Each structure stands twice: as C-alpha cells, then as structure tokens.
Length: 317
Image (cartoon, rainbow, N blue to C red; front, side, top):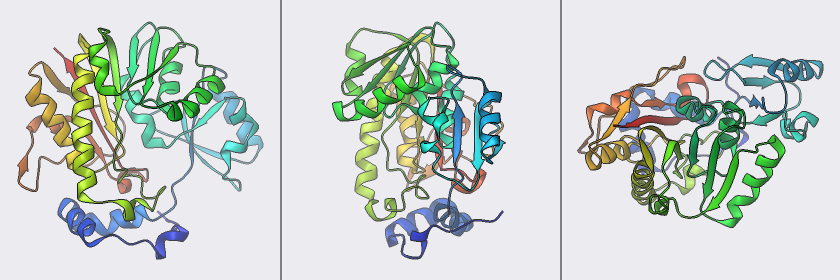
C-alpha cells in the first residue's frame, strides 16, 4: 500500500519518552506505527439517511468524478478519493446529505447500535458526528440526550444537528460526572471520552509535541470518573460503549479495568465487526488489567489505514 507522507512529516519527531513508551507497546511494529501516523489519511464520509439514500449520494459524487469505496463496518460509510479533497465545500455536504467523518470514528455508534425508540445518552457529544450517526440509525425516533461540557462546544454540535435534520436530540450542558445525579436512566450510553488523541497523529501531527505522560495520567482520571457516572445512569440490561481516539493503555484498558473493579454488575461484551484489530493490552508498566479487556477493540493506524481507536462494549447485569 502506497502511503503519502504528510508535509509536516520531515519536521515531526517523537519525544524520547514517547518513543520509549510506544516501543514498549508496539515492539517491532513501532516504525510501522510512525510511518502510518505521519502519512495522509484517506478522506471518508457517512451518508445521512435522514435526508437521502445511499445510492443517491453515490451517484451524485460519481458524477463529480469521485471514487467511493465501502467501509466494511458501516453500511453508510465510504472512503472517498478524487482530485478535490475539500469535501466539506460540496453542495451535498451543505445540504446535509453526508457527514465528513473518519472511518474509525464510525465504529462506536455501530457497536452501540441504538434502535428506534431507545433512550440514548451521548455524554461527550460535540461536534456531533456520532450523535447524528445514531439519530440516523434510530430514524429520528426515540430520544438522544446530546451532552457536552461548555457552551462553546455546543456551537458545532447545534449546527451539525440542524444541517443533518436530526430531530430526536435534546442538547444539555453539564459535566458528564454529574449526569448520574439527575435521576434519568438510559437504554444505551456512548462515552466517547476526551483523550490524548495519540491515534490521530496523522490528522494532528502537533499531538507529538503536546504529548506528555502527565497529561495521559490526568486524562485517565477524568475518563474513569466519566465512565463510572455513565454506568450508574445506565438501566439494568442496558448497554454502554466507551471509546477514545487514543492508543494509550491508561486511557483505555485501564479505564475498563477500573470500571470492572468498581462495578461488579458490569460485563464486557465481545465486539463482532468486519475489521482488522490488534490484541488489547493486558499489562503495561507494572499494571495488570482484567483478562476481560481481551474482548475490547484496539485498533492501531496501520491495522486498517485509519486513525487509531479503542472501543469497549459494556452491559449492565
């Protein structure tokens, strides 16, 4: 597979602590990880079935000389290639016929699989890629509580809900850690948590420069509090998905291990998707995690030529 390096690739470099850490995690795959992380990522879109049909968008883009390749884990998702890369400037985007969304970002909603009539919480919703994806899966029936932490983050969320014709979402502004105090129980919950973004270096090369171990530890603490609050707000028999675009064990497997130790009625469920995945991390830097993390989905950028991602599906028994 031919990879085109990013213009920033020659200037980008990993801090010694980053390289040491990720060589521990990846071993002989580290160089491949950095090669993919410093190369262009293929643009991808998700057709918005609230407004149009998949075939309609395919025909419209083909007429504009775009090539579309099906994303295996999302029926409405396609990798798009062509002379133009500014997909957000196309008329079809303005009309809300498709949403520009990274292919791996489509996984969490596909795993949660909300149905029409469900009561769903998207705890960290902005800018709305997964909220609007779930709304389409629910055919605008049922309810999505789309929450985020600040008014500034509401702006892109509100615009995307409007553009895509999402009408079954209500927007709330609060810290996710407070949601369990509101007395509302949800059928399904998505916690796409704020993270270090170490899986998104190919979109944000500056991640290599801002990364530091202290940041990862602080984020891990926040993620644990969010996932615990979400689980408390989940109905018995309900399902929750925890996801990040980080490939750090402290932000992923360690968070799931924390929840399993804290909540004995939490059970990790196996994820079955047509996607290439890597083995989850069961131990790192002297910490051992529950063997249940083997059921989680860990994706490095080189696995599917996407962003790196982590997804866990949890049931409340």
